Image (cartoon, rainbow, N blue to C red; front, side):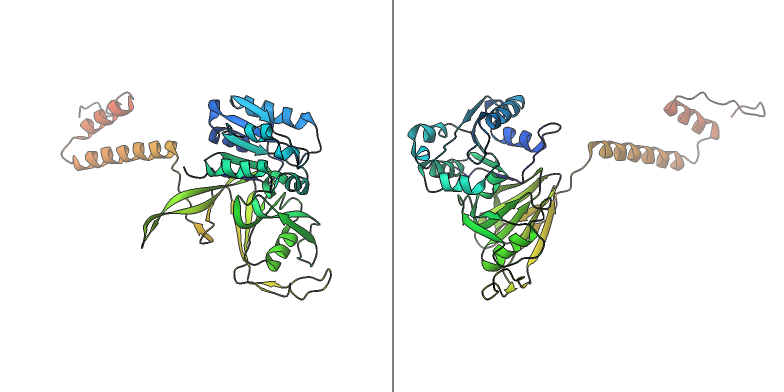
Length: 333
């Protein structure tokens, strides 16, 4: 069975109006057959956060919403909580404190159950803290700013659903360019992914044609929402991160930058932008078809050179349903 999609949400997703991202999550989880497990461990709120998402997901048609909330690593070993994920078709991790979430969940039976659910095809989504924990490396905490500086952030282990990567959220809104650049400067094997608010990076495995081996598989990131996903590829970076002192600005030259708005697709394996699919507006198609018919009729009329002016007037009047004007001089055509 193919691995399920990841929905990496940059936080502050629309909950009041169009709910584009939440609708997409419920639809991918099975629509009216969706059984969604909400993991609110990162949140400092109590039952309120679960009640909010319960109401939202049910309003979009989900059949069942259950809370899976470990508050300690002992809780994350509880077989009853682990079993609650067994029948889930979608897992949603809320925002809050990502270091708390990873400290409680990563490396436990519950964390393993989330990874196993992803591998058997379950949709795994997370917003804010729940987005950061999906990568192999996770921003634990740190300050904002556009210039990368030594020690401006700390990194912890994530669930590793998205390998060889580090994810940051609220990216543009909280000016987190510098801290993500700092991480990739220190660890150039990682792909840096920053996700704006009310925006989702949806990662799926898709079939791909390989010239040598036939049909293979590629991991594709697609963007949904009103912001953008920013990708830092440090494969060829030149940096002084290994020798910079304390909070000194870092050299980061040669980083390839990709800013991906909604509709963009990015191959995470080759680290290349994929061609945008062109969607055709049905109304535009209908207008073009009608214009083509008019042109063909006009061509036939022009070709009918032997027809009298009166015959052409009658033909046009029948098509437009307009009355036929009488000749001004009183003669017949």
